Amino acid sequence: MFGFERLEVWEKAILFADTVYSITRDFPSDEPFGLTNQMRRAAVSISSNIAEGSSRNSKKDFARFVEIATASLFEVVSQSFISRHQGMLSPEEFQELYLAAEEQGRMLCGLRRSLLDDA
Image (tube, rainbow, N blue to C red; front, side, top):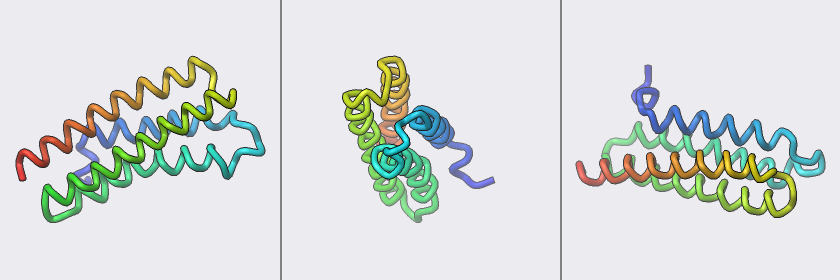
């Protein structure tokens, strides 16, 4: 088992990506390389950066990767607003994604803070 697999924030990031994939599955067929691709790539980037950061030699370096993961999360949130405005996300889907993003954001913030406090 890799160390990042024990992190709840990483597990939640995997579930968040699953949610993004599920919600974007019903986006219009002319959208696969627009918002669909952008949202999916950003969502996958969250868990990927947590995993990559965990391999770094210092907590400060790990914290930087958590910062990048947070930026990817914010990307998904911004793209969710656009998707909602374009009628690709229902209010319920938007709310589900937004609430999951809030939870993920709190967890990432907590991890980053703990890494920097220990550094």
